[in-house]
Length: 346
Image (tube, rainbow, N blue to C red; front, side, top):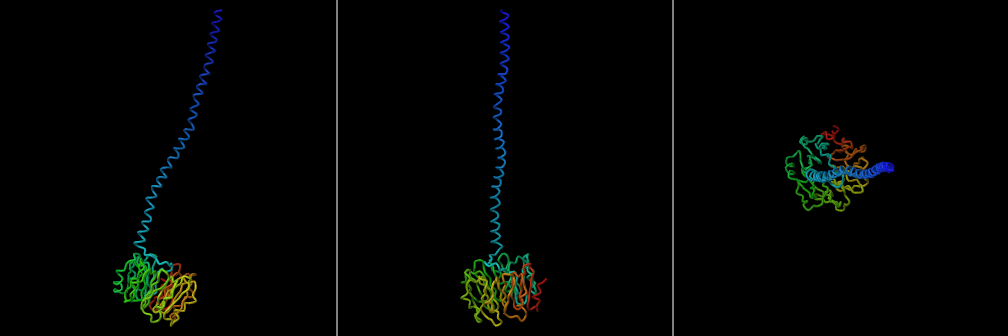
């Protein structure tokens, strides 16, 4: 009996041991579960770690922008104030070409000046933005200074001029427009000190003109031929003066003229779609919006034979010849060529 009981106990002990092993295995399995919960945590950390490198990049961009952007307006402002004179409101007042009394002048792309029968002194000019010509030649530099050829006296008289944005000449009379809207004058005794808000100037033989910002025109000097009878003009956007007549371009593309009309130089009332005008000694030239050109007045030398011109972007009327600038940068000229002033095809 005791042996039987002992055997039973042994069997029970063995069974208990066998049952305990899976229980511990189950507990071990349950304890491994928390390691599974750590996977989403690791994923979030990985996502955060992925986002973090982008932050310094954005900060770098933000830090870089303030270092670059303020420099740009400073550079433009400095260049504008120091080297670029203010331009008149009308875009066609370029002054890139000028027909003088017996020569032609034009500005090359690099700011140097070319001439046909002009003074060799112009060959030394640089950074020129506008030219004007009659018997002599004027050049307006990018810094608002005026240079002159042909006469040391004229050069001396304009040497002190500053902040000039527009020029014209009928020797010995020289006129300049300052960026403040006032007028500089030399070579005559005319008084224009009261003129203000001027945006364009023109010189006749003994009369000067100023276009005001509100589209009116002022005149000072002789009125022998009625060239100063411009008090009723309005809505004018550009002016040009010949020897004894003056021409005004209106906002609507029509043209008005006053003064001597012995050769029909003032017969412009039927002109339309005009974007630029130029008055010569006894003729007047108009540039149409389509690039064609009209002319009226003295034509004994053929200076009004511009009917075949096309693709023109600027015109200038001289003493007895007419100069045109084509859209491709080439030049055309008609009229008197006794001094080779029309030899501009080179």
